[in-house]
Image 1: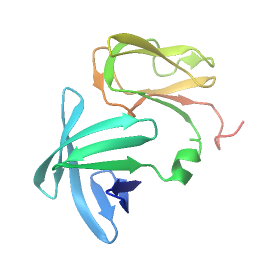
Image 2 (image 1 turned 60 degrees about the vertical axis):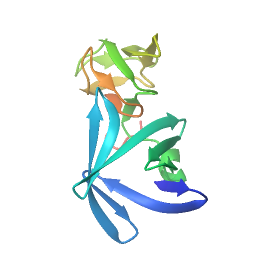
Image 3 (image 1 turned 30 degrees about the horizontal axis):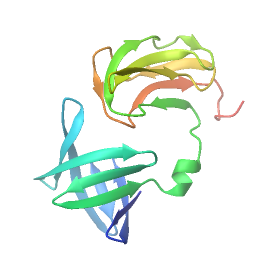
Length: 159
C-alpha cells in the first residue's frame, strides 16, 4: 500500500505481524478496543492511532499528523479468485444468515450488519458455497474486514 503525508509518499508492505518500509522491517501488532483500532505496537512501542475508511482510502491520525493509506492500484483492481465479503464500515453483526457449507445464490443476504443505527444487508456477489464465516452475532467489526467467504466451486477461480 502507499502511505501519503504532507505530499510525501512511501510504499509499505504489511504481512501478518510485520511491516516493511523500504528496506526496514518492523514487528507490528494492532490493538483494538470494542473492535476498533486504537493503537499499534511497533517494535514493542505502543503508538496511539485513529483510522477512518473513506472508499479505497484510509485516513490515519497518529502523533498529530494525518496519513492517507491506499492499496496499490494493481491490487485494488485485481478481482479475488474466490468471493469474499468485507465490512463496508465499522459495525456490529446483528444476524448471520448462512453457515459454512450452505449454497448461496447471487444477491442472497448472508449477513446483517448494524452501523450508524441502520441495518445493512450484506449480499453474496455470486452463487457458490459458504467457505468461511468470520464473525458471530453480536461481534463488533472494523471496516474492510472479511465477514464471509464464498467459494464459487471452480479450481482456478474461473468458471
